[in-house]
Amino acid sequence: MSKRTVLTGITTTGAPHLGNYVGAIKPCIEASHDPNVKSYYFLADFHSLVKSQDPQQMRQSSLEIAATWLALGLDTERAIFYRQSDIPEIPELTWILTCSTAKGLMNRAHAYKAAVQENLDAGEDADFAITMGLFGYPILMAADILMFNSTHVPVGKDQVQHLEMARDIAQRFNHHYGELFALPEAVVEEHVSVLPGKDGRKMSKSYNNTIPLWLPEKQLRKAIMGIVTNSREPGEPKDPDDSALFTIYAAFASQAQRDAMRQAYREGISWGEAKQQTFELINMELAESRVRYEALIAEPAQIETALREGAGKARAFATPFLAQIRNAVGIRRLA
Ligand code: TRP
Image 1 (tube, rainbow, N blue to C red):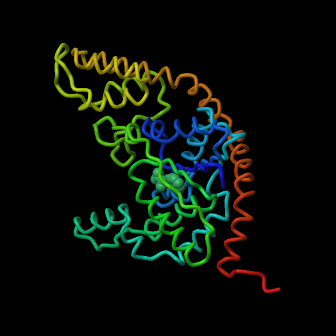
Image 2: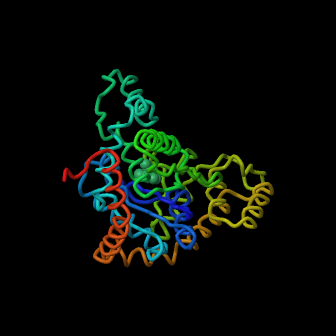
Image 3: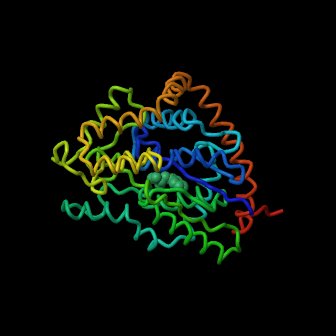
């Protein structure tokens, strides 16, 4: 394996937002053009099932996210773009890995622990509303990653623990059954990985502070105008390092634009003006793709075809690799 293999999944719950774009989609699409990288990008719809039991929402979100990646120019000749649920090898590998993964490892998962803590704080039973899907989520994610011998996995900081778990799971398997799996590492883009939302906390569906990626221009402007700022008046110097608005601007800006905006903050640019410039910068970056996005949404068959083709390519690797894995664990033909 000389090539880097980059892989990442995007959960299909809700509409993609600016945080997804900056933290995951954009760097991945850029990487998809690199001939020295083998890349896999997929809709993690089995993961979404943990969070959403609304079939209509599941479907809508898959459609929107697939359209997003295609509209933004993912190179589907080079990158393998597919839907997790089109790869039956993944749930099969999940089970195989489940059988050699310590329950104690899963007990330590932040997401699971947080759910337990929330229950206890609310005076509920520790297990209240916690599904096995939530509990085993990191194993499914490990299977996604290990299935393709991924070496580099771009994720947000909140997913780093899942990557550590995937490595643990791979190492344990390799130790017992032989060196089958590459050990993946998380790739966290330090300055952009956590985009703040409108309230200054991490932009996240669960905080309800997101700015959807494909808002029509007027609404995008309105959303940006709604980003919280402090009460410093026009003319008063402002601290770019203590401003969600600046962080959002910086994520879309070139180094030169960042430096200029830093200077403008120190010189007392008004919040209104800083917001207007932020809007213009973001809108300029998205306007053309937005037109392609609308066209794709109106034509789901085109998206479906792209996903099917991607699944075919992914399975060309997964099917023989899973055969090897089955053989390694002793699930073999008897004659
Ligand atoms: N758990 C990831 C998230 O919530 C999504 C995901 C699923 C993923 N499988 C993956 C990311 C494999 C990277 C690799 O963002």
